[in-house]
Length: 96
Ligand SMILES: [Cu+2]
Image: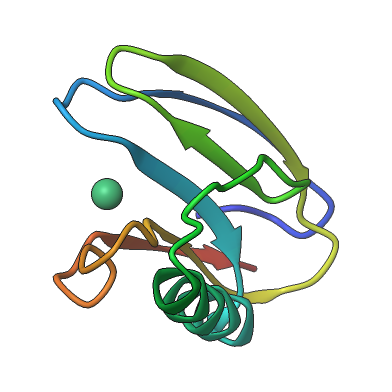
């Protein structure tokens, strides 16, 4: 549980063998990113870049993402590498 106005620094380590990403946002942002990834797959260019709310982690990599939760509501963390989000690689954060 996070309180509105709180700033959280997530420290994320990819302990797996393949790339994953950590995308923070509401449901709309997650859906948009999932759509964007589908378009990237079609174009054959799967190069992803870090954004304010996205970090891409290669195996063994650790990165930080700091976010100020200015609004209450339900936020999600999702991985949008092909198939993972649909496969349940997501988590929910409730902001009060
Ligand atoms: Cu993943």
